[in-house]
Image 1 (cartoon, rainbow, N blue to C red):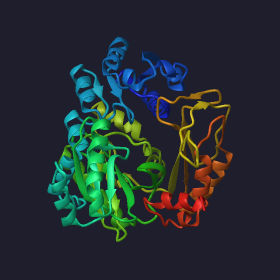
Image 2: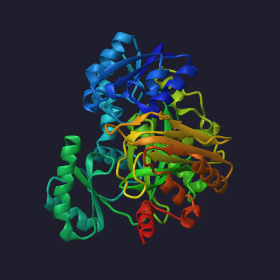
Image 3: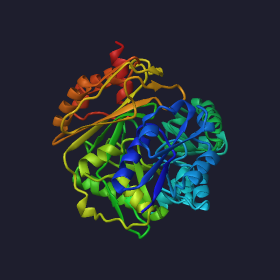
Length: 449
Protein backbone atom coordinates (compact mmCIF):
# COMPACT_ATOMS: atom_id res chain seq x y z
CA UNK A 1 0.00 0.00 0.00
CA UNK A 2 1.10 3.58 -0.58
CA UNK A 3 2.72 5.49 2.23
CA UNK A 4 1.43 8.92 1.27
CA UNK A 5 -1.07 10.17 -1.35
CA UNK A 6 -1.16 13.72 -2.67
CA UNK A 7 -4.65 14.85 -3.69
CA UNK A 8 -4.38 17.05 -6.77
CA UNK A 9 -7.79 18.61 -6.24
CA UNK A 10 -9.92 20.63 -3.85
CA UNK A 11 -13.36 20.77 -2.25
CA UNK A 12 -15.57 17.82 -1.45
CA UNK A 13 -13.72 15.29 -3.62
CA UNK A 14 -10.44 16.11 -1.89
CA UNK A 15 -12.10 15.49 1.48
CA UNK A 16 -13.60 12.25 0.15
CA UNK A 17 -10.16 10.97 -0.86
CA UNK A 18 -8.69 12.03 2.50
CA UNK A 19 -11.30 9.96 4.32
CA UNK A 20 -10.63 6.90 2.17
CA UNK A 21 -6.87 7.21 2.70
CA UNK A 22 -7.34 7.57 6.45
CA UNK A 23 -9.34 4.33 6.58
CA UNK A 24 -6.60 2.58 4.62
CA UNK A 25 -3.89 3.92 6.92
CA UNK A 26 -2.38 6.08 4.18
CA UNK A 27 -1.00 9.58 4.80
CA UNK A 28 -2.37 12.53 2.81
CA UNK A 29 -1.06 15.74 1.29
CA UNK A 30 -3.45 18.54 0.34
CA UNK A 31 -2.46 21.07 -2.29
CA UNK A 32 -4.24 24.38 -2.41
CA UNK A 33 -4.37 27.75 -4.07
CA UNK A 34 -4.03 30.98 -2.11
CA UNK A 35 -7.83 31.33 -2.24
CA UNK A 36 -8.25 27.91 -0.58
CA UNK A 37 -5.85 28.39 2.33
CA UNK A 38 -8.70 28.06 4.85
CA UNK A 39 -10.43 25.15 3.11
CA UNK A 40 -11.39 21.96 4.93
CA UNK A 41 -9.27 19.70 2.74
CA UNK A 42 -6.25 21.70 3.87
CA UNK A 43 -7.28 21.41 7.50
CA UNK A 44 -7.93 17.67 7.51
CA UNK A 45 -5.03 16.41 5.40
CA UNK A 46 -1.86 15.34 7.21
CA UNK A 47 0.17 17.91 5.28
CA UNK A 48 -0.58 20.79 2.94
CA UNK A 49 1.29 22.78 0.30
CA UNK A 50 0.28 26.03 -1.40
CA UNK A 51 0.81 25.59 -5.14
CA UNK A 52 -0.11 29.00 -6.51
CA UNK A 53 -2.62 31.85 -6.78
CA UNK A 54 -6.38 31.60 -7.29
CA UNK A 55 -6.29 31.08 -11.04
CA UNK A 56 -6.59 27.29 -11.64
CA UNK A 57 -4.04 27.48 -14.45
CA UNK A 58 -1.48 28.69 -11.92
CA UNK A 59 -2.44 26.27 -9.15
CA UNK A 60 -4.69 23.22 -9.60
CA UNK A 61 -3.66 22.81 -13.25
CA UNK A 62 -0.03 23.75 -12.62
CA UNK A 63 1.73 20.42 -13.20
CA UNK A 64 5.27 21.50 -12.20
CA UNK A 65 4.02 22.95 -8.90
CA UNK A 66 1.96 19.84 -8.09
CA UNK A 67 4.88 17.53 -8.83
CA UNK A 68 7.17 19.70 -6.71
CA UNK A 69 4.68 19.41 -3.84
CA UNK A 70 4.68 15.62 -4.23
CA UNK A 71 8.47 15.47 -4.23
CA UNK A 72 9.06 17.72 -1.22
CA UNK A 73 6.45 15.86 0.85
CA UNK A 74 7.57 12.40 -0.26
CA UNK A 75 4.20 11.42 -1.70
CA UNK A 76 4.39 8.18 -3.65
CA UNK A 77 1.00 8.51 -5.36
CA UNK A 78 -1.34 11.20 -6.70
CA UNK A 79 -5.14 11.04 -6.72
CA UNK A 80 -6.53 13.51 -9.29
CA UNK A 81 -10.19 13.44 -8.19
CA UNK A 82 -12.41 14.75 -10.99
CA UNK A 83 -11.98 17.87 -13.12
CA UNK A 84 -8.71 19.84 -13.33
CA UNK A 85 -6.03 17.28 -14.34
CA UNK A 86 -8.04 14.09 -13.79
CA UNK A 87 -8.25 13.26 -17.50
CA UNK A 88 -4.96 14.82 -18.56
CA UNK A 89 -2.80 12.08 -20.06
CA UNK A 90 0.30 14.27 -19.97
CA UNK A 91 -0.07 14.74 -16.22
CA UNK A 92 -0.51 10.99 -15.72
CA UNK A 93 2.57 10.34 -17.86
CA UNK A 94 4.70 12.90 -16.01
CA UNK A 95 3.68 11.44 -12.66
CA UNK A 96 4.71 7.96 -13.75
CA UNK A 97 8.00 9.29 -15.18
CA UNK A 98 8.74 10.91 -11.82
CA UNK A 99 8.13 7.62 -10.01
CA UNK A 100 4.84 8.81 -8.54
CA UNK A 101 1.86 6.50 -9.07
CA UNK A 102 -1.11 8.10 -10.80
CA UNK A 103 -4.30 6.72 -9.26
CA UNK A 104 -6.18 6.13 -12.48
CA UNK A 105 -5.74 4.49 -15.87
CA UNK A 106 -2.56 4.51 -17.93
CA UNK A 107 -1.80 7.71 -19.90
CA UNK A 108 -2.33 6.00 -23.25
CA UNK A 109 -5.78 4.83 -22.14
CA UNK A 110 -6.72 8.36 -21.06
CA UNK A 111 -5.63 9.64 -24.48
CA UNK A 112 -7.51 6.93 -26.34
CA UNK A 113 -10.81 7.33 -24.52
CA UNK A 114 -10.43 11.11 -24.45
CA UNK A 115 -10.47 11.16 -28.23
CA UNK A 116 -14.15 10.52 -28.79
CA UNK A 117 -13.78 9.69 -32.46
CA UNK A 118 -11.14 7.02 -31.76
CA UNK A 119 -13.10 5.70 -28.77
CA UNK A 120 -16.23 5.40 -30.89
CA UNK A 121 -14.30 3.52 -33.59
CA UNK A 122 -12.82 1.15 -30.99
CA UNK A 123 -16.24 0.41 -29.53
CA UNK A 124 -17.71 -0.34 -32.95
CA UNK A 125 -14.90 -2.81 -33.69
CA UNK A 126 -15.57 -4.60 -30.39
CA UNK A 127 -19.31 -5.03 -30.63
CA UNK A 128 -20.40 -2.13 -28.42
CA UNK A 129 -23.43 -0.36 -29.97
CA UNK A 130 -22.58 3.13 -31.20
CA UNK A 131 -24.75 6.00 -32.35
CA UNK A 132 -24.95 6.30 -36.16
CA UNK A 133 -22.59 9.03 -37.31
CA UNK A 134 -19.31 9.94 -38.97
CA UNK A 135 -16.46 7.43 -38.95
CA UNK A 136 -14.03 10.05 -37.71
CA UNK A 137 -13.36 13.78 -37.67
CA UNK A 138 -15.37 15.91 -40.09
CA UNK A 139 -12.91 18.31 -41.71
CA UNK A 140 -15.26 20.55 -43.68
CA UNK A 141 -18.90 21.54 -44.10
CA UNK A 142 -19.40 19.61 -47.35
CA UNK A 143 -18.30 16.36 -45.69
CA UNK A 144 -20.64 17.14 -42.80
CA UNK A 145 -23.55 17.70 -45.17
CA UNK A 146 -22.98 14.28 -46.72
CA UNK A 147 -22.91 12.44 -43.37
CA UNK A 148 -25.93 14.33 -42.05
CA UNK A 149 -27.99 13.47 -45.11
CA UNK A 150 -27.01 9.82 -44.76
CA UNK A 151 -27.98 9.41 -41.09
CA UNK A 152 -30.87 11.90 -41.20
CA UNK A 153 -31.67 15.01 -39.18
CA UNK A 154 -31.59 15.98 -36.38
CA UNK A 155 -27.85 15.55 -35.88
CA UNK A 156 -25.42 16.68 -33.20
CA UNK A 157 -21.96 18.11 -33.87
CA UNK A 158 -19.56 17.20 -31.05
CA UNK A 159 -16.00 18.19 -30.21
CA UNK A 160 -13.54 15.31 -30.38
CA UNK A 161 -11.88 16.45 -27.15
CA UNK A 162 -15.08 17.83 -25.68
CA UNK A 163 -16.75 17.76 -22.31
CA UNK A 164 -19.28 19.71 -20.28
CA UNK A 165 -21.40 20.48 -23.33
CA UNK A 166 -18.78 22.70 -24.98
CA UNK A 167 -18.06 22.36 -28.68
CA UNK A 168 -21.48 20.80 -29.17
CA UNK A 169 -24.35 21.91 -31.42
CA UNK A 170 -27.68 20.27 -32.32
CA UNK A 171 -28.86 20.82 -35.91
CA UNK A 172 -32.47 20.08 -36.82
CA UNK A 173 -32.42 21.16 -40.47
CA UNK A 174 -29.79 21.43 -43.20
CA UNK A 175 -29.87 25.26 -43.62
CA UNK A 176 -28.59 25.65 -40.04
CA UNK A 177 -25.75 23.15 -40.44
CA UNK A 178 -22.98 25.40 -41.75
CA UNK A 179 -23.20 28.01 -38.99
CA UNK A 180 -23.48 25.34 -36.29
CA UNK A 181 -20.47 23.46 -37.68
CA UNK A 182 -18.22 26.53 -37.61
CA UNK A 183 -19.48 27.54 -34.16
CA UNK A 184 -18.73 24.08 -32.73
CA UNK A 185 -15.25 24.10 -34.27
CA UNK A 186 -14.49 27.55 -32.89
CA UNK A 187 -15.74 26.72 -29.39
CA UNK A 188 -13.85 23.41 -29.36
CA UNK A 189 -10.63 25.11 -30.41
CA UNK A 190 -10.95 27.75 -27.69
CA UNK A 191 -11.96 25.34 -24.92
CA UNK A 192 -9.72 22.35 -25.65
CA UNK A 193 -7.02 23.51 -28.07
CA UNK A 194 -8.42 21.04 -30.60
CA UNK A 195 -11.08 22.12 -33.10
CA UNK A 196 -11.80 18.60 -34.37
CA UNK A 197 -15.51 17.68 -34.46
CA UNK A 198 -17.53 14.66 -35.47
CA UNK A 199 -21.17 13.99 -36.20
CA UNK A 200 -23.81 11.76 -34.63
CA UNK A 201 -27.52 11.11 -34.98
CA UNK A 202 -29.48 13.15 -32.43
CA UNK A 203 -32.24 11.29 -30.61
CA UNK A 204 -35.44 12.88 -29.31
CA UNK A 205 -36.04 12.48 -25.55
CA UNK A 206 -33.31 9.95 -24.74
CA UNK A 207 -32.02 9.00 -21.32
CA UNK A 208 -28.44 9.33 -20.12
CA UNK A 209 -27.45 6.02 -18.56
CA UNK A 210 -23.99 5.19 -17.27
CA UNK A 211 -22.24 2.11 -15.92
CA UNK A 212 -19.53 2.34 -13.27
CA UNK A 213 -16.69 -0.14 -13.73
CA UNK A 214 -13.67 -1.27 -11.73
CA UNK A 215 -10.80 -3.17 -13.33
CA UNK A 216 -7.41 -4.28 -12.00
CA UNK A 217 -4.17 -4.88 -13.89
CA UNK A 218 -4.69 -8.65 -13.67
CA UNK A 219 -7.58 -8.62 -16.13
CA UNK A 220 -10.38 -8.82 -13.55
CA UNK A 221 -13.28 -6.40 -13.72
CA UNK A 222 -16.75 -5.74 -12.32
CA UNK A 223 -19.59 -3.41 -13.25
CA UNK A 224 -22.16 -1.69 -11.05
CA UNK A 225 -25.92 -1.14 -11.42
CA UNK A 226 -26.64 1.74 -13.76
CA UNK A 227 -26.95 5.40 -12.87
CA UNK A 228 -29.63 7.50 -14.57
CA UNK A 229 -28.25 11.02 -15.11
CA UNK A 230 -30.98 12.36 -17.39
CA UNK A 231 -31.92 15.35 -15.23
CA UNK A 232 -29.44 17.81 -16.66
CA UNK A 233 -29.25 21.31 -18.07
CA UNK A 234 -26.95 22.03 -21.00
CA UNK A 235 -25.28 18.67 -20.42
CA UNK A 236 -24.57 19.53 -16.76
CA UNK A 237 -26.12 16.97 -14.41
CA UNK A 238 -28.35 18.17 -11.59
CA UNK A 239 -29.96 14.98 -10.21
CA UNK A 240 -28.73 11.40 -10.52
CA UNK A 241 -30.26 8.13 -9.37
CA UNK A 242 -29.47 4.44 -9.20
CA UNK A 243 -31.01 2.26 -10.44
CA UNK A 244 -32.84 3.81 -13.39
CA UNK A 245 -36.65 3.56 -13.20
CA UNK A 246 -36.76 2.19 -16.78
CA UNK A 247 -33.96 -0.41 -16.69
CA UNK A 248 -34.89 -4.00 -15.86
CA UNK A 249 -32.60 -6.90 -14.99
CA UNK A 250 -32.19 -8.03 -18.62
CA UNK A 251 -31.26 -4.56 -19.88
CA UNK A 252 -28.95 -4.07 -16.88
CA UNK A 253 -27.02 -7.22 -17.82
CA UNK A 254 -26.78 -6.06 -21.44
CA UNK A 255 -25.46 -2.67 -20.35
CA UNK A 256 -22.98 -4.41 -18.06
CA UNK A 257 -21.74 -6.66 -20.85
CA UNK A 258 -21.26 -3.66 -23.14
CA UNK A 259 -19.38 -1.78 -20.41
CA UNK A 260 -17.05 -4.71 -19.74
CA UNK A 261 -16.45 -5.05 -23.49
CA UNK A 262 -15.39 -1.38 -23.50
CA UNK A 263 -13.01 -2.05 -20.60
CA UNK A 264 -11.50 -5.07 -22.33
CA UNK A 265 -11.12 -3.29 -25.68
CA UNK A 266 -9.34 -0.29 -24.13
CA UNK A 267 -7.22 -2.34 -21.67
CA UNK A 268 -8.68 -0.14 -18.95
CA UNK A 269 -7.43 -0.29 -15.36
CA UNK A 270 -8.90 1.44 -12.25
CA UNK A 271 -12.30 3.12 -11.86
CA UNK A 272 -14.12 4.44 -14.91
CA UNK A 273 -17.59 5.10 -16.24
CA UNK A 274 -19.03 4.02 -19.58
CA UNK A 275 -21.81 6.36 -20.66
CA UNK A 276 -24.72 5.34 -22.88
CA UNK A 277 -27.68 6.99 -24.54
CA UNK A 278 -30.93 5.03 -24.13
CA UNK A 279 -33.65 5.75 -26.71
CA UNK A 280 -37.39 5.51 -26.23
CA UNK A 281 -37.37 1.89 -27.45
CA UNK A 282 -34.70 1.00 -24.84
CA UNK A 283 -31.94 0.59 -27.41
CA UNK A 284 -28.66 1.84 -26.02
CA UNK A 285 -25.61 3.39 -27.65
CA UNK A 286 -22.10 4.20 -26.44
CA UNK A 287 -21.48 7.92 -25.82
CA UNK A 288 -18.07 8.09 -24.14
CA UNK A 289 -15.95 6.74 -21.31
CA UNK A 290 -14.92 8.93 -18.39
CA UNK A 291 -11.47 7.88 -17.23
CA UNK A 292 -11.85 9.07 -13.64
CA UNK A 293 -14.12 8.92 -10.64
CA UNK A 294 -17.47 10.63 -11.25
CA UNK A 295 -19.15 13.35 -9.18
CA UNK A 296 -22.12 11.00 -8.76
CA UNK A 297 -20.17 7.97 -7.54
CA UNK A 298 -21.83 8.05 -4.05
CA UNK A 299 -25.13 6.67 -5.33
CA UNK A 300 -23.33 3.59 -6.65
CA UNK A 301 -21.68 3.21 -3.25
CA UNK A 302 -25.05 3.48 -1.52
CA UNK A 303 -26.81 0.78 -3.55
CA UNK A 304 -23.89 -1.68 -3.40
CA UNK A 305 -22.05 -0.88 -0.16
CA UNK A 306 -18.72 -0.72 -2.05
CA UNK A 307 -16.27 2.14 -1.40
CA UNK A 308 -15.14 3.18 -4.87
CA UNK A 309 -12.35 5.52 -3.75
CA UNK A 310 -10.75 2.87 -1.58
CA UNK A 311 -10.97 0.40 -4.44
CA UNK A 312 -9.30 2.94 -6.73
CA UNK A 313 -6.39 3.31 -4.34
CA UNK A 314 -5.99 -0.43 -3.79
CA UNK A 315 -6.00 -1.16 -7.52
CA UNK A 316 -3.41 1.55 -8.15
CA UNK A 317 -1.24 0.01 -5.43
CA UNK A 318 -1.21 -3.23 -7.42
CA UNK A 319 -3.66 -5.17 -5.31
CA UNK A 320 -5.97 -7.53 -7.20
CA UNK A 321 -9.66 -6.70 -7.26
CA UNK A 322 -11.06 -8.73 -4.37
CA UNK A 323 -14.68 -8.38 -5.48
CA UNK A 324 -16.53 -10.76 -7.77
CA UNK A 325 -19.40 -9.71 -10.01
CA UNK A 326 -21.75 -11.87 -7.94
CA UNK A 327 -20.89 -9.72 -4.90
CA UNK A 328 -22.12 -6.53 -6.59
CA UNK A 329 -25.74 -6.67 -5.48
CA UNK A 330 -28.36 -3.97 -5.97
CA UNK A 331 -29.77 -2.89 -2.63
CA UNK A 332 -32.54 -0.28 -2.65
CA UNK A 333 -32.56 3.07 -4.41
CA UNK A 334 -30.37 6.17 -4.19
CA UNK A 335 -30.58 9.79 -5.38
CA UNK A 336 -27.99 12.54 -5.51
CA UNK A 337 -28.74 16.27 -5.76
CA UNK A 338 -25.90 18.54 -6.83
CA UNK A 339 -26.41 21.68 -4.77
CA UNK A 340 -24.75 24.54 -6.63
CA UNK A 341 -24.07 28.16 -5.72
CA UNK A 342 -26.27 29.66 -8.39
CA UNK A 343 -29.66 31.23 -8.89
CA UNK A 344 -32.34 28.50 -8.99
CA UNK A 345 -34.15 30.47 -11.71
CA UNK A 346 -31.44 31.92 -13.97
CA UNK A 347 -28.54 29.60 -13.06
CA UNK A 348 -26.32 32.64 -12.65
CA UNK A 349 -23.32 31.79 -10.42
CA UNK A 350 -23.59 33.21 -6.90
CA UNK A 351 -20.24 33.29 -5.13
CA UNK A 352 -20.09 34.72 -1.63
CA UNK A 353 -19.83 33.95 2.07
CA UNK A 354 -22.09 31.32 3.62
CA UNK A 355 -23.75 32.85 6.69
CA UNK A 356 -25.67 29.74 7.78
CA UNK A 357 -25.11 26.08 6.95
CA UNK A 358 -27.18 23.24 8.39
CA UNK A 359 -27.08 19.78 6.85
CA UNK A 360 -29.84 17.18 7.21
CA UNK A 361 -29.15 13.93 9.02
CA UNK A 362 -30.60 10.53 9.79
CA UNK A 363 -30.36 6.98 8.42
CA UNK A 364 -29.78 6.87 4.68
CA UNK A 365 -28.81 10.53 4.36
CA UNK A 366 -25.30 11.56 3.30
CA UNK A 367 -23.87 15.00 2.58
CA UNK A 368 -20.54 15.29 0.77
CA UNK A 369 -19.34 18.87 1.11
CA UNK A 370 -16.37 21.04 1.96
CA UNK A 371 -18.58 24.01 2.89
CA UNK A 372 -19.39 25.33 6.35
CA UNK A 373 -20.80 28.43 8.00
CA UNK A 374 -18.36 31.23 7.28
CA UNK A 375 -16.74 29.55 4.28
CA UNK A 376 -16.53 31.45 1.01
CA UNK A 377 -17.65 30.17 -2.36
CA UNK A 378 -15.15 31.81 -4.70
CA UNK A 379 -15.74 32.70 -8.37
CA UNK A 380 -12.62 30.84 -9.46
CA UNK A 381 -13.83 27.24 -9.37
CA UNK A 382 -16.81 24.96 -9.83
CA UNK A 383 -19.99 26.23 -8.14
CA UNK A 384 -20.72 22.93 -6.34
CA UNK A 385 -21.51 23.56 -2.67
CA UNK A 386 -22.60 20.09 -1.60
CA UNK A 387 -23.87 16.74 -2.79
CA UNK A 388 -26.99 15.57 -0.97
CA UNK A 389 -27.37 11.79 -1.22
CA UNK A 390 -30.19 9.62 0.09
CA UNK A 391 -30.65 5.85 0.15
CA UNK A 392 -33.84 3.92 0.87
CA UNK A 393 -35.48 0.58 0.15
CA UNK A 394 -37.57 1.76 -2.82
CA UNK A 395 -37.64 4.68 -5.24
CA UNK A 396 -40.77 6.12 -3.63
CA UNK A 397 -39.17 5.92 -0.19
CA UNK A 398 -36.01 7.56 -1.51
CA UNK A 399 -38.05 10.42 -3.03
CA UNK A 400 -39.81 10.94 0.30
CA UNK A 401 -36.49 10.90 2.15
CA UNK A 402 -34.96 13.38 -0.30
CA UNK A 403 -37.91 15.74 0.15
CA UNK A 404 -37.38 15.70 3.89
CA UNK A 405 -33.63 16.20 3.55
CA UNK A 406 -34.08 19.11 1.14
CA UNK A 407 -36.45 20.78 3.62
CA UNK A 408 -33.86 20.47 6.41
CA UNK A 409 -30.90 21.62 4.30
CA UNK A 410 -30.26 25.28 5.14
CA UNK A 411 -27.73 27.40 3.24
CA UNK A 412 -27.89 31.17 3.68
CA UNK A 413 -25.79 34.05 2.42
CA UNK A 414 -25.75 32.82 -1.18
CA UNK A 415 -28.32 31.62 -3.69
CA UNK A 416 -28.33 27.87 -4.31
CA UNK A 417 -30.19 25.34 -6.43
CA UNK A 418 -32.01 23.90 -3.37
CA UNK A 419 -35.41 25.47 -4.28
CA UNK A 420 -35.19 23.98 -7.78
CA UNK A 421 -34.37 20.54 -6.38
CA UNK A 422 -37.45 20.73 -4.14
CA UNK A 423 -39.65 21.48 -7.14
CA UNK A 424 -38.17 18.64 -9.18
CA UNK A 425 -38.77 16.09 -6.41
CA UNK A 426 -42.42 17.15 -6.24
CA UNK A 427 -43.04 17.04 -9.97
CA UNK A 428 -45.57 14.32 -10.96
CA UNK A 429 -43.65 13.24 -14.08
CA UNK A 430 -40.40 12.94 -12.15
CA UNK A 431 -42.09 10.99 -9.35
CA UNK A 432 -43.47 8.54 -11.94
CA UNK A 433 -40.02 8.18 -13.55
CA UNK A 434 -41.21 9.72 -16.81
CA UNK A 435 -38.36 11.95 -17.94
CA UNK A 436 -35.49 12.27 -20.40
CA UNK A 437 -32.53 14.56 -20.95
CA UNK A 438 -35.00 17.22 -22.15
CA UNK A 439 -36.99 17.10 -18.90
CA UNK A 440 -35.41 20.16 -17.30
CA UNK A 441 -35.93 22.36 -20.36
CA UNK A 442 -39.67 21.64 -20.37
CA UNK A 443 -39.85 21.81 -16.57
CA UNK A 444 -38.22 25.26 -16.42
CA UNK A 445 -40.40 26.54 -19.24
CA UNK A 446 -43.53 25.43 -17.35
CA UNK A 447 -42.34 27.17 -14.19
CA UNK A 448 -42.19 30.48 -16.06
CA UNK A 449 -45.80 30.22 -17.28
